[in-house]
Image (cartoon, rainbow, N blue to C red; front, side):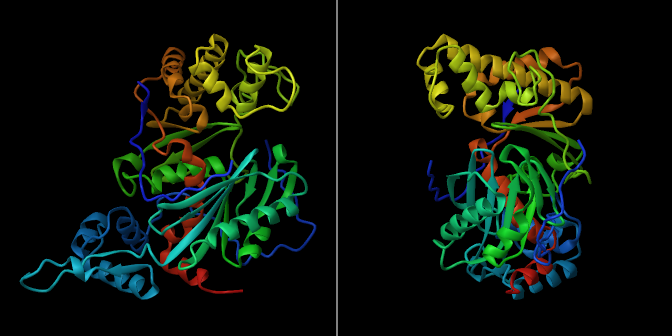
Length: 432
């Protein structure tokens, strides 16, 4: 049974405008001192554990934090005091019960009013920019078309837009920038190969970090989406939801997968694997020259081209947003409905193949291919069930809905704070 995860809610002020690694050395020197590889998953260590439980459930007392983290009360007190001094946590004496007998137990929480982080998701077509507080709540988001052309110029344009957007929160201090992007990512250097954009050895970390004057982390976007399920959902921290193995499957304009094990995202040294060219029964022609590659069959562009061939869309002119096909299907177009159902079936069979291969404890489906046309979800579930030979895995659609890209960018911007809050705060407050 395919189920949708509970929606993730939070304060949001949203503004919207519309193989082997081949990363090459940059032709110019790369400033690496401010590029920090992200920690995609639940980090070990008492400080990280205290910060996570405060972010997920604060305000909480020190006794509650002790029970939640398994640390001693002395350890919790020490780390809470250090993080209060650093400006990461704050006490809430106003919540102490009146007339309490004995030593007051003052709750504490993450200081979610003084700081923000900036997340950027660079997609093949659209780039999302978000600001987040230290609890991982998205404060605002904006979308811009992903610039075409040389990578340095495109990244400079994205950075300028992101800086202008973040400046709206002039009373908050920006601490970190996180970039989630497709293609092949080198987290240590922030270099990226993104064939869809024509970028090879793109200096993502260097350009974005220099533009903000802040530490920057860069991650492969599907791995970041998997990490957001571990760190930013209501059941985050050391719950049963994070133990065992998980598979995250993403589909929108591109397709991808990531694996998690015991609360950590598997990040291969050579970069994430690709499922773009998995064979399907589709007759869609791929840019690689083959017919039936998964990404060509189920991507938004693939759906739009199929709709054009079926007469749902005009035979010439630029391709419209995929929402046009959704509207046609909901208005009774049989051709549009059949195209979207076939996409759902193809996705279901692909998920079944990967579930049988990895046999995870749970599977999470993310991306607008699953969330923007929920009428197709039963067809995904049926195709998955019919094609799979392994039973028992929990399969659900992400609770982030159509905001998976935003939360992926957000978790990259927060990952260092969540893995080592005091060390990250020291790096964030050094200005260069």
